[in-house]
Length: 487
Image 1 (cartoon, rainbow, N blue to C red):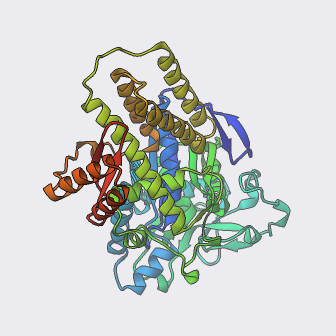
Image 2 (cartoon, rainbow, N blue to C red):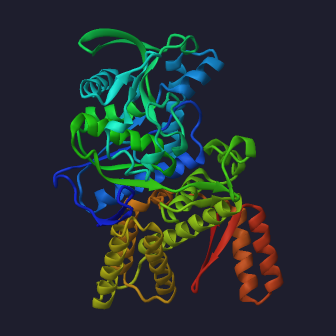
Protein backbone atom coordinates (compact mmCIF):
# COMPACT_ATOMS: atom_id res chain seq x y z
CA UNK A 1 0.00 0.00 0.00
CA UNK A 2 1.38 3.39 -1.03
CA UNK A 3 -0.08 6.84 -0.50
CA UNK A 4 0.80 10.48 -1.03
CA UNK A 5 1.70 12.15 2.26
CA UNK A 6 1.04 15.90 2.29
CA UNK A 7 3.62 16.33 5.06
CA UNK A 8 6.51 14.96 2.99
CA UNK A 9 4.98 15.75 -0.42
CA UNK A 10 5.85 12.36 -1.82
CA UNK A 11 4.46 8.86 -2.26
CA UNK A 12 5.30 6.67 0.73
CA UNK A 13 4.81 3.05 1.66
CA UNK A 14 2.08 2.77 4.26
CA UNK A 15 3.39 1.61 7.63
CA UNK A 16 0.78 1.81 10.40
CA UNK A 17 1.68 2.56 14.00
CA UNK A 18 0.36 -0.84 15.07
CA UNK A 19 -0.83 -3.89 13.16
CA UNK A 20 -3.89 -4.45 15.33
CA UNK A 21 -5.70 -1.18 14.63
CA UNK A 22 -5.55 1.89 12.40
CA UNK A 23 -6.48 5.24 13.91
CA UNK A 24 -8.00 7.61 11.34
CA UNK A 25 -9.32 11.10 12.00
CA UNK A 26 -11.07 13.47 9.64
CA UNK A 27 -12.35 16.98 10.20
CA UNK A 28 -16.11 17.15 10.24
CA UNK A 29 -18.24 20.10 9.13
CA UNK A 30 -18.90 23.34 10.92
CA UNK A 31 -22.64 22.88 11.45
CA UNK A 32 -23.83 26.39 10.70
CA UNK A 33 -25.41 25.67 7.31
CA UNK A 34 -26.38 22.80 5.03
CA UNK A 35 -23.45 20.82 3.60
CA UNK A 36 -22.54 21.86 0.05
CA UNK A 37 -21.25 19.56 -2.66
CA UNK A 38 -17.59 20.43 -2.02
CA UNK A 39 -18.05 19.24 1.57
CA UNK A 40 -19.66 16.07 0.30
CA UNK A 41 -16.92 15.40 -2.24
CA UNK A 42 -14.41 15.42 0.63
CA UNK A 43 -16.46 13.08 2.79
CA UNK A 44 -16.90 10.64 -0.12
CA UNK A 45 -13.09 10.63 -0.60
CA UNK A 46 -12.59 9.94 3.10
CA UNK A 47 -15.18 7.17 2.95
CA UNK A 48 -13.32 5.51 0.07
CA UNK A 49 -10.06 5.64 2.05
CA UNK A 50 -11.69 3.97 5.06
CA UNK A 51 -13.50 1.36 2.95
CA UNK A 52 -10.32 0.57 1.01
CA UNK A 53 -8.28 0.01 4.17
CA UNK A 54 -10.99 -2.25 5.57
CA UNK A 55 -11.16 -4.08 2.24
CA UNK A 56 -7.47 -4.95 2.41
CA UNK A 57 -7.95 -6.32 5.93
CA UNK A 58 -7.01 -3.50 8.27
CA UNK A 59 -8.96 -3.04 11.48
CA UNK A 60 -9.92 0.63 11.20
CA UNK A 61 -11.24 2.96 13.89
CA UNK A 62 -12.47 6.40 12.85
CA UNK A 63 -13.29 9.66 14.59
CA UNK A 64 -14.82 12.85 13.20
CA UNK A 65 -15.62 16.09 15.01
CA UNK A 66 -18.59 18.38 14.52
CA UNK A 67 -17.70 22.02 15.05
CA UNK A 68 -20.72 23.30 16.95
CA UNK A 69 -19.07 26.39 18.44
CA UNK A 70 -16.95 28.88 16.50
CA UNK A 71 -17.22 32.33 14.92
CA UNK A 72 -19.70 31.18 12.24
CA UNK A 73 -22.04 29.14 14.41
CA UNK A 74 -22.32 31.95 16.97
CA UNK A 75 -22.82 34.60 14.31
CA UNK A 76 -25.53 32.76 12.40
CA UNK A 77 -27.40 31.42 15.42
CA UNK A 78 -27.67 35.00 16.66
CA UNK A 79 -28.94 36.13 13.26
CA UNK A 80 -31.78 33.61 13.63
CA UNK A 81 -32.30 34.40 17.35
CA UNK A 82 -31.85 30.72 18.20
CA UNK A 83 -29.70 29.25 20.96
CA UNK A 84 -26.48 27.65 19.72
CA UNK A 85 -27.39 24.05 20.62
CA UNK A 86 -30.75 24.12 18.82
CA UNK A 87 -29.21 25.89 15.83
CA UNK A 88 -26.30 23.44 15.34
CA UNK A 89 -28.38 20.31 16.00
CA UNK A 90 -30.60 21.16 13.01
CA UNK A 91 -27.62 21.22 10.65
CA UNK A 92 -26.04 18.18 12.29
CA UNK A 93 -29.13 16.10 11.54
CA UNK A 94 -29.17 17.35 7.95
CA UNK A 95 -25.49 16.55 7.46
CA UNK A 96 -25.86 12.99 8.77
CA UNK A 97 -28.85 12.46 6.46
CA UNK A 98 -26.84 13.72 3.47
CA UNK A 99 -23.90 11.41 4.02
CA UNK A 100 -26.23 8.43 4.49
CA UNK A 101 -27.82 9.18 1.09
CA UNK A 102 -24.36 8.99 -0.54
CA UNK A 103 -23.63 5.71 1.26
CA UNK A 104 -20.87 7.28 3.33
CA UNK A 105 -20.15 5.21 6.40
CA UNK A 106 -20.53 7.26 9.58
CA UNK A 107 -17.40 7.50 11.72
CA UNK A 108 -17.18 5.29 14.80
CA UNK A 109 -17.04 8.45 16.90
CA UNK A 110 -18.96 11.54 15.75
CA UNK A 111 -18.12 14.17 18.34
CA UNK A 112 -19.64 17.63 18.91
CA UNK A 113 -16.71 19.72 20.09
CA UNK A 114 -18.73 21.29 22.91
CA UNK A 115 -18.40 17.89 24.64
CA UNK A 116 -14.60 18.25 24.67
CA UNK A 117 -14.14 21.26 26.95
CA UNK A 118 -12.23 19.35 29.69
CA UNK A 119 -9.77 17.95 27.13
CA UNK A 120 -9.19 21.40 25.63
CA UNK A 121 -8.56 22.92 29.05
CA UNK A 122 -6.00 20.23 29.94
CA UNK A 123 -4.12 20.70 26.67
CA UNK A 124 -4.07 24.49 26.98
CA UNK A 125 -2.81 24.21 30.55
CA UNK A 126 0.00 21.91 29.38
CA UNK A 127 1.02 24.44 26.73
CA UNK A 128 0.97 27.23 29.31
CA UNK A 129 3.18 25.16 31.63
CA UNK A 130 5.68 24.53 28.83
CA UNK A 131 5.68 28.15 27.67
CA UNK A 132 4.20 27.24 24.30
CA UNK A 133 1.22 29.45 25.15
CA UNK A 134 0.67 32.74 26.92
CA UNK A 135 -2.09 34.95 28.25
CA UNK A 136 -2.25 38.29 26.44
CA UNK A 137 -3.63 41.66 27.48
CA UNK A 138 -6.97 40.94 25.79
CA UNK A 139 -7.43 37.96 28.20
CA UNK A 140 -7.18 35.45 25.39
CA UNK A 141 -4.63 32.63 25.43
CA UNK A 142 -2.45 32.33 22.33
CA UNK A 143 -0.10 29.68 21.02
CA UNK A 144 3.45 31.02 20.68
CA UNK A 145 4.41 29.86 17.21
CA UNK A 146 8.14 30.65 17.61
CA UNK A 147 8.39 27.91 20.25
CA UNK A 148 7.46 25.20 17.75
CA UNK A 149 10.35 24.82 15.34
CA UNK A 150 8.51 22.53 12.92
CA UNK A 151 5.62 24.94 12.45
CA UNK A 152 6.45 25.48 8.77
CA UNK A 153 6.54 21.84 7.71
CA UNK A 154 3.00 20.75 6.69
CA UNK A 155 1.96 24.05 5.09
CA UNK A 156 5.42 24.88 3.69
CA UNK A 157 5.52 28.28 5.40
CA UNK A 158 8.44 30.70 5.19
CA UNK A 159 9.16 31.19 8.90
CA UNK A 160 11.12 34.34 8.14
CA UNK A 161 7.83 36.03 7.33
CA UNK A 162 6.43 35.46 10.81
CA UNK A 163 6.20 38.60 12.90
CA UNK A 164 7.30 38.31 16.51
CA UNK A 165 4.35 38.71 18.91
CA UNK A 166 1.83 39.27 16.14
CA UNK A 167 -1.50 37.60 16.95
CA UNK A 168 -4.66 36.53 15.15
CA UNK A 169 -7.88 35.58 16.92
CA UNK A 170 -10.03 34.79 13.88
CA UNK A 171 -10.57 31.12 13.10
CA UNK A 172 -9.56 31.33 9.44
CA UNK A 173 -6.70 33.26 7.86
CA UNK A 174 -4.04 32.79 5.18
CA UNK A 175 -0.26 32.33 5.21
CA UNK A 176 0.36 36.05 4.84
CA UNK A 177 -1.26 36.48 8.25
CA UNK A 178 0.64 33.62 9.91
CA UNK A 179 1.25 34.51 13.54
CA UNK A 180 0.42 33.41 17.07
CA UNK A 181 -3.08 31.92 17.02
CA UNK A 182 -5.76 31.83 19.66
CA UNK A 183 -6.43 28.80 21.86
CA UNK A 184 -8.84 30.40 24.31
CA UNK A 185 -10.95 33.28 23.06
CA UNK A 186 -11.88 35.85 25.67
CA UNK A 187 -15.60 36.49 25.95
CA UNK A 188 -17.08 39.48 24.16
CA UNK A 189 -20.56 40.89 24.47
CA UNK A 190 -21.20 39.79 20.89
CA UNK A 191 -20.77 36.16 22.04
CA UNK A 192 -23.93 36.44 24.22
CA UNK A 193 -24.13 33.42 26.53
CA UNK A 194 -21.78 31.21 24.53
CA UNK A 195 -18.91 30.86 27.00
CA UNK A 196 -17.39 28.63 29.70
CA UNK A 197 -15.76 29.69 32.96
CA UNK A 198 -12.57 27.63 33.38
CA UNK A 199 -9.63 27.90 35.76
CA UNK A 200 -6.00 28.02 34.54
CA UNK A 201 -2.77 28.28 36.47
CA UNK A 202 -0.61 31.07 35.00
CA UNK A 203 2.65 32.16 36.64
CA UNK A 204 1.72 30.17 39.76
CA UNK A 205 -1.63 31.93 40.09
CA UNK A 206 -5.08 30.52 39.41
CA UNK A 207 -7.01 32.60 36.90
CA UNK A 208 -10.67 32.06 36.00
CA UNK A 209 -11.30 33.04 32.40
CA UNK A 210 -14.64 33.56 30.70
CA UNK A 211 -13.99 31.75 27.51
CA UNK A 212 -14.86 29.82 24.39
CA UNK A 213 -12.47 27.63 22.41
CA UNK A 214 -10.53 28.61 19.33
CA UNK A 215 -11.29 26.46 16.30
CA UNK A 216 -7.95 24.65 16.05
CA UNK A 217 -7.75 23.28 19.60
CA UNK A 218 -11.04 21.44 19.08
CA UNK A 219 -9.64 18.79 16.73
CA UNK A 220 -6.50 18.31 18.81
CA UNK A 221 -8.64 17.67 21.90
CA UNK A 222 -10.90 15.29 19.97
CA UNK A 223 -7.94 13.18 18.86
CA UNK A 224 -6.46 13.20 22.35
CA UNK A 225 -9.67 11.92 23.91
CA UNK A 226 -10.44 9.14 21.44
CA UNK A 227 -7.02 8.14 20.10
CA UNK A 228 -4.35 9.46 22.44
CA UNK A 229 -1.16 11.23 21.33
CA UNK A 230 -0.70 9.61 17.89
CA UNK A 231 -2.82 8.59 14.91
CA UNK A 232 -2.06 6.88 11.62
CA UNK A 233 -3.95 9.08 9.13
CA UNK A 234 -5.45 12.57 9.29
CA UNK A 235 -7.69 13.61 6.39
CA UNK A 236 -9.46 16.73 5.18
CA UNK A 237 -9.88 19.07 2.22
CA UNK A 238 -6.91 21.00 0.89
CA UNK A 239 -7.97 24.38 2.28
CA UNK A 240 -7.53 23.04 5.81
CA UNK A 241 -3.78 22.52 5.46
CA UNK A 242 -3.26 26.08 6.64
CA UNK A 243 -3.97 27.24 9.17
CA UNK A 244 -6.07 24.49 10.70
CA UNK A 245 -4.00 21.35 10.24
CA UNK A 246 -0.71 23.16 10.74
CA UNK A 247 -2.04 24.49 14.04
CA UNK A 248 -3.31 21.07 15.09
CA UNK A 249 0.20 19.69 14.72
CA UNK A 250 1.73 22.53 16.72
CA UNK A 251 -0.73 22.18 19.60
CA UNK A 252 -0.74 18.40 19.84
CA UNK A 253 3.00 17.84 19.48
CA UNK A 254 3.75 20.61 21.97
CA UNK A 255 1.67 18.65 24.49
CA UNK A 256 2.80 15.11 23.65
CA UNK A 257 6.34 15.56 22.24
CA UNK A 258 5.42 12.85 19.70
CA UNK A 259 4.62 12.88 15.99
CA UNK A 260 0.90 13.59 15.86
CA UNK A 261 -0.18 12.01 12.54
CA UNK A 262 2.02 9.76 10.44
CA UNK A 263 0.18 10.49 7.17
CA UNK A 264 -1.85 13.47 5.96
CA UNK A 265 -4.28 13.07 3.02
CA UNK A 266 -6.08 16.01 1.40
CA UNK A 267 -8.74 16.18 -1.29
CA UNK A 268 -8.63 18.80 -4.02
CA UNK A 269 -10.91 21.71 -4.86
CA UNK A 270 -14.33 21.45 -6.41
CA UNK A 271 -15.04 24.05 -9.05
CA UNK A 272 -18.43 24.83 -10.60
CA UNK A 273 -18.33 25.52 -14.33
CA UNK A 274 -14.68 26.56 -13.94
CA UNK A 275 -15.31 28.95 -11.02
CA UNK A 276 -14.79 28.57 -7.29
CA UNK A 277 -18.08 27.72 -5.63
CA UNK A 278 -19.56 30.70 -3.76
CA UNK A 279 -23.02 32.01 -2.93
CA UNK A 280 -22.09 35.34 -4.55
CA UNK A 281 -21.44 33.53 -7.85
CA UNK A 282 -24.83 31.82 -7.77
CA UNK A 283 -23.14 28.40 -8.05
CA UNK A 284 -23.43 27.24 -4.44
CA UNK A 285 -25.23 23.89 -4.39
CA UNK A 286 -26.43 21.63 -1.61
CA UNK A 287 -27.68 18.08 -2.02
CA UNK A 288 -31.25 19.39 -1.74
CA UNK A 289 -30.58 21.76 -4.64
CA UNK A 290 -29.48 18.84 -6.80
CA UNK A 291 -32.43 16.70 -5.69
CA UNK A 292 -34.79 19.48 -6.80
CA UNK A 293 -32.99 19.88 -10.14
CA UNK A 294 -33.24 16.12 -10.80
CA UNK A 295 -36.56 15.45 -9.08
CA UNK A 296 -37.65 13.12 -11.90
CA UNK A 297 -34.57 10.93 -11.44
CA UNK A 298 -34.85 7.95 -9.13
CA UNK A 299 -33.14 8.87 -5.86
CA UNK A 300 -30.94 5.76 -5.71
CA UNK A 301 -29.67 6.50 -9.22
CA UNK A 302 -29.06 10.18 -8.44
CA UNK A 303 -27.14 9.57 -5.21
CA UNK A 304 -24.97 6.88 -6.77
CA UNK A 305 -24.32 9.14 -9.77
CA UNK A 306 -23.07 11.88 -7.44
CA UNK A 307 -20.86 9.37 -5.65
CA UNK A 308 -19.55 8.01 -8.98
CA UNK A 309 -18.76 11.51 -10.20
CA UNK A 310 -16.84 12.27 -6.99
CA UNK A 311 -14.75 9.06 -7.02
CA UNK A 312 -14.09 8.92 -10.75
CA UNK A 313 -11.31 11.50 -10.46
CA UNK A 314 -8.10 11.37 -8.49
CA UNK A 315 -8.96 12.52 -4.97
CA UNK A 316 -6.13 15.05 -4.78
CA UNK A 317 -7.06 16.75 -8.06
CA UNK A 318 -9.54 19.56 -8.61
CA UNK A 319 -12.76 18.56 -10.31
CA UNK A 320 -15.29 20.70 -12.12
CA UNK A 321 -19.00 20.31 -11.48
CA UNK A 322 -21.65 20.88 -14.08
CA UNK A 323 -25.16 19.53 -14.48
CA UNK A 324 -24.20 18.06 -17.86
CA UNK A 325 -21.45 16.02 -16.16
CA UNK A 326 -23.86 14.86 -13.50
CA UNK A 327 -26.30 13.83 -16.23
CA UNK A 328 -23.52 11.77 -17.82
CA UNK A 329 -22.89 10.04 -14.49
CA UNK A 330 -26.61 9.31 -14.13
CA UNK A 331 -26.47 7.54 -17.48
CA UNK A 332 -23.34 5.68 -16.36
CA UNK A 333 -25.15 4.42 -13.26
CA UNK A 334 -28.06 3.28 -15.41
CA UNK A 335 -25.59 1.36 -17.57
CA UNK A 336 -24.11 -0.26 -14.45
CA UNK A 337 -27.63 -1.26 -13.38
CA UNK A 338 -28.34 -2.76 -16.81
CA UNK A 339 -25.24 -4.96 -16.63
CA UNK A 340 -26.16 -6.09 -13.12
CA UNK A 341 -29.73 -6.89 -14.19
CA UNK A 342 -28.45 -8.81 -17.20
CA UNK A 343 -26.26 -10.97 -14.97
CA UNK A 344 -29.10 -11.57 -12.52
CA UNK A 345 -31.56 -12.51 -15.27
CA UNK A 346 -29.13 -15.05 -16.68
CA UNK A 347 -28.76 -16.66 -13.28
CA UNK A 348 -32.50 -16.76 -12.52
CA UNK A 349 -33.53 -18.03 -15.97
CA UNK A 350 -30.74 -20.59 -16.45
CA UNK A 351 -32.14 -23.82 -17.91
CA UNK A 352 -29.08 -25.34 -19.49
CA UNK A 353 -26.46 -27.84 -18.39
CA UNK A 354 -24.20 -26.91 -15.45
CA UNK A 355 -20.63 -27.21 -16.72
CA UNK A 356 -18.50 -25.53 -14.04
CA UNK A 357 -15.76 -22.89 -14.35
CA UNK A 358 -13.08 -23.11 -17.01
CA UNK A 359 -9.40 -22.60 -16.24
CA UNK A 360 -9.19 -19.61 -18.59
CA UNK A 361 -12.13 -17.92 -16.88
CA UNK A 362 -10.67 -18.59 -13.44
CA UNK A 363 -7.34 -17.07 -14.48
CA UNK A 364 -9.11 -14.06 -15.97
CA UNK A 365 -11.05 -13.36 -12.77
CA UNK A 366 -7.89 -13.65 -10.69
CA UNK A 367 -6.23 -11.08 -12.94
CA UNK A 368 -9.25 -8.78 -12.54
CA UNK A 369 -9.06 -8.93 -8.75
CA UNK A 370 -5.29 -8.51 -8.67
CA UNK A 371 -5.47 -5.43 -10.89
CA UNK A 372 -8.37 -3.99 -8.90
CA UNK A 373 -6.51 -4.33 -5.59
CA UNK A 374 -3.30 -2.99 -7.14
CA UNK A 375 -5.11 0.22 -8.13
CA UNK A 376 -6.63 0.60 -4.68
CA UNK A 377 -3.20 0.21 -3.11
CA UNK A 378 -1.75 2.80 -5.49
CA UNK A 379 -2.74 5.86 -3.44
CA UNK A 380 -6.45 4.99 -3.68
CA UNK A 381 -6.50 5.25 -7.47
CA UNK A 382 -10.26 4.83 -7.88
CA UNK A 383 -10.40 6.05 -11.52
CA UNK A 384 -8.14 3.17 -12.56
CA UNK A 385 -10.06 0.77 -10.30
CA UNK A 386 -13.20 1.88 -12.15
CA UNK A 387 -11.43 1.12 -15.43
CA UNK A 388 -10.98 -2.46 -14.20
CA UNK A 389 -14.72 -2.65 -13.57
CA UNK A 390 -15.56 -1.24 -17.01
CA UNK A 391 -13.35 -3.85 -18.70
CA UNK A 392 -15.12 -6.58 -16.72
CA UNK A 393 -18.55 -5.15 -17.62
CA UNK A 394 -17.66 -5.06 -21.31
CA UNK A 395 -16.44 -8.66 -21.15
CA UNK A 396 -19.62 -9.69 -19.31
CA UNK A 397 -22.06 -8.10 -21.73
CA UNK A 398 -20.28 -9.58 -24.75
CA UNK A 399 -19.82 -13.06 -23.26
CA UNK A 400 -23.46 -13.33 -22.16
CA UNK A 401 -24.67 -12.09 -25.54
CA UNK A 402 -22.54 -14.71 -27.29
CA UNK A 403 -23.50 -17.48 -24.82
CA UNK A 404 -19.90 -18.10 -23.80
CA UNK A 405 -20.36 -18.39 -20.02
CA UNK A 406 -21.55 -21.14 -17.74
CA UNK A 407 -23.94 -20.58 -14.84
CA UNK A 408 -21.08 -20.80 -12.32
CA UNK A 409 -19.07 -18.26 -14.28
CA UNK A 410 -21.97 -15.79 -14.35
CA UNK A 411 -22.46 -16.24 -10.60
CA UNK A 412 -18.74 -15.59 -10.17
CA UNK A 413 -19.08 -12.29 -12.04
CA UNK A 414 -21.96 -11.22 -9.80
CA UNK A 415 -19.82 -12.08 -6.77
CA UNK A 416 -17.03 -9.95 -8.22
CA UNK A 417 -19.38 -6.98 -8.55
CA UNK A 418 -20.34 -7.41 -4.89
CA UNK A 419 -16.67 -7.55 -3.92
CA UNK A 420 -15.80 -4.40 -5.88
CA UNK A 421 -18.76 -2.65 -4.31
CA UNK A 422 -17.27 -3.01 -0.82
CA UNK A 423 -15.19 0.05 -1.77
CA UNK A 424 -17.10 1.71 -4.63
CA UNK A 425 -20.70 1.53 -3.39
CA UNK A 426 -22.13 2.39 -6.79
CA UNK A 427 -24.16 -0.84 -7.21
CA UNK A 428 -27.65 -1.10 -5.75
CA UNK A 429 -28.37 -4.80 -5.44
CA UNK A 430 -31.87 -4.11 -4.10
CA UNK A 431 -33.01 -3.41 -7.66
CA UNK A 432 -32.73 -7.16 -8.33
CA UNK A 433 -35.51 -7.91 -5.86
CA UNK A 434 -38.07 -5.56 -7.41
CA UNK A 435 -40.62 -7.37 -9.54
CA UNK A 436 -43.00 -4.86 -11.04
CA UNK A 437 -46.18 -6.08 -12.69
CA UNK A 438 -46.35 -5.01 -16.34
CA UNK A 439 -49.82 -3.79 -17.44
CA UNK A 440 -51.59 -5.94 -20.04
CA UNK A 441 -51.75 -3.00 -22.47
CA UNK A 442 -47.96 -2.68 -22.35
CA UNK A 443 -47.42 -6.42 -22.88
CA UNK A 444 -49.81 -6.34 -25.86
CA UNK A 445 -47.91 -3.46 -27.47
CA UNK A 446 -44.63 -5.35 -26.94
CA UNK A 447 -46.12 -8.43 -28.65
CA UNK A 448 -47.38 -6.30 -31.57
CA UNK A 449 -43.97 -4.63 -31.88
CA UNK A 450 -42.17 -7.99 -31.94
CA UNK A 451 -44.57 -9.29 -34.61
CA UNK A 452 -43.99 -6.13 -36.67
CA UNK A 453 -40.25 -6.55 -36.37
CA UNK A 454 -40.49 -10.23 -37.34
CA UNK A 455 -42.53 -9.25 -40.41
CA UNK A 456 -39.94 -6.55 -41.20
CA UNK A 457 -42.50 -3.78 -40.77
CA UNK A 458 -39.87 -1.57 -39.14
CA UNK A 459 -41.93 1.61 -39.41
CA UNK A 460 -44.69 0.07 -37.25
CA UNK A 461 -42.11 -1.47 -34.91
CA UNK A 462 -40.52 1.93 -34.32
CA UNK A 463 -43.91 3.56 -33.80
CA UNK A 464 -44.86 1.01 -31.15
CA UNK A 465 -41.48 1.43 -29.44
CA UNK A 466 -42.06 5.19 -29.25
CA UNK A 467 -45.55 4.64 -27.82
CA UNK A 468 -44.09 2.41 -25.12
CA UNK A 469 -41.48 5.05 -24.33
CA UNK A 470 -44.25 7.63 -23.90
CA UNK A 471 -45.82 5.21 -21.39
CA UNK A 472 -42.45 5.10 -19.51
CA UNK A 473 -41.46 1.62 -20.64
CA UNK A 474 -38.46 0.57 -22.67
CA UNK A 475 -37.74 -2.47 -24.82
CA UNK A 476 -34.58 -4.44 -24.13
CA UNK A 477 -33.60 -6.63 -27.07
CA UNK A 478 -31.33 -9.64 -26.99
CA UNK A 479 -30.44 -12.21 -29.64
CA UNK A 480 -33.21 -14.64 -28.58
CA UNK A 481 -35.97 -12.42 -27.17
CA UNK A 482 -37.20 -8.96 -26.27
CA UNK A 483 -38.51 -7.85 -22.89
CA UNK A 484 -40.01 -4.75 -21.33
CA UNK A 485 -38.79 -2.68 -18.41
CA UNK A 486 -40.13 0.33 -16.53
CA UNK A 487 -38.05 3.45 -17.24
